[in-house]
Length: 113
Image 1 (spheres, helix red, strand yellow):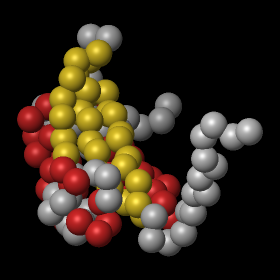
Image 2 (cartoon, rainbow, N blue to C red):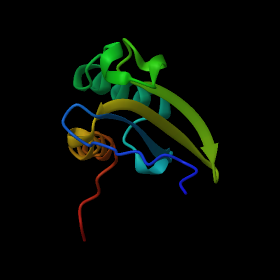
Image 3 (cartoon, rainbow, N blue to C red):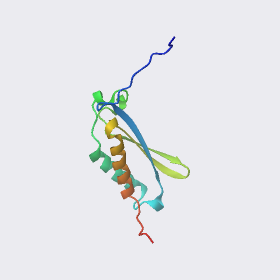
Image 4 (cartoon, rainbow, N blue to C red):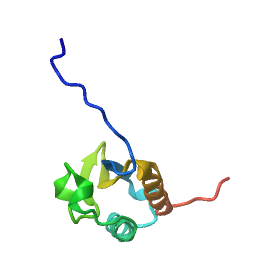
């Protein structure tokens, strides 16, 4: 006897998910100060991520007409930049990779010894 119905999940091209990424900020690792780093990240995200209509955000209705949400926190003595956005399941990995690459480009790069 089943007490709960079984639900089938379909992960097709039209299925969207919420992604949350956290980036710790330490001044010694970045080429610019915190405010400038956040500003550069916002400019990138504004150009990179699309606006999502209601049909795509489903349960995440606070993302209707929003490209992303940014929040800030403080953990283990470091400022943390949190970015959340809605994307299709099939593009989740590639969008995360692109955002990570952008963050890495903002870091100081020292020549290898």
